[in-house]
Length: 481
Image (cartoon, rainbow, N blue to C red; front, side, top):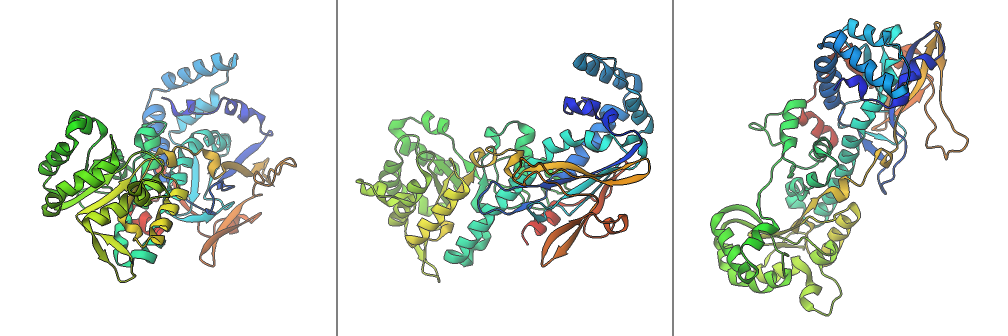
């Protein structure tokens, strides 16, 4: 699709609505508010994907490299019938004649966190006649960028929590945390691109993921090589159809067949197709020696009920249910007590829970395990669309706003500050500069052009060319600081 059609309809008239003599529009992208408890800093991620996929590939393949008459007449056909007017497309023709996007984007390094209300990047046109293009790109940019930033931020919050509990209960096993948060979200996302972008954000904080296309995407957009570095990974795992096909009457036979099929490595088996508690208290004791003799780990996966109660146990008349999965596995397979005094399951057995996990529930699971004397590293959490799809652009209040224009050679510092708002929508004013302060990034607005050129913002895209081409490894190192 012609990328100029990827916009909100109201953008079509803005070129003629700016004051006569407008030659420059300068805008920024900012997270304005957090709706996630405990999160006051937002991770910047996804711009390099956007630039490569849309500003370079999309515009070159579907606009600049297409016959001018073809793309311009197509654009006019849709806009004419959409607005019911004879739309003037001279500016579209002029852009095609130019042959590249006359836009400069300055940004902080991807993987960097900024406090709420601190801009992440700026856009400005580089040729005066294309002043209209800066904010014309807002819709496309906004629709793509908010999700990888949001998912990367939420994933980092999970990582913080899991790191802290691992430090408290099993600090000799911190590397496990890299795998403790596992992306299960793909099937529940709003589309494949949504799944990939969110999954890429998750993979900045964790290596565990079932969103397979993330591996290909990172090679394509962030200079990785899956044959030389760990991008994402997973294990052999069953689903309910496998268990059902083996029949309810012979579920233990299905377990035995799976253990024989995979004699080594990690094997995850969904265990609540019928009766989780029977699996834990009848089938596993019978299979115990086979599990212990196997060169690998059997992972039990509950998939229904309250995850906190299922994993950790709860007040219940049934003593089995009251113990929960981890304690029942300890009762049967034992383990060790680490230097911090917490129980760590036998490495031949483990658990993963992947249904309806949230930051709050992840915290509760870790805390209740700790209170029971178990290390938090006894369980892996499958983080799915219940975490990553229940978000919008407003989760962190992302918005792109113009703060400076030039009209007839005169610079104007512009801003919005609705009297009916609570302050969330108040924008910066004029040109901005980002700078480091006490280990964090802050900004000041209403700066001079000379000051705007200083600070931590650097040009990543200008006039159709990518100027910064980061690797996944570089970004992971930033996000883990």
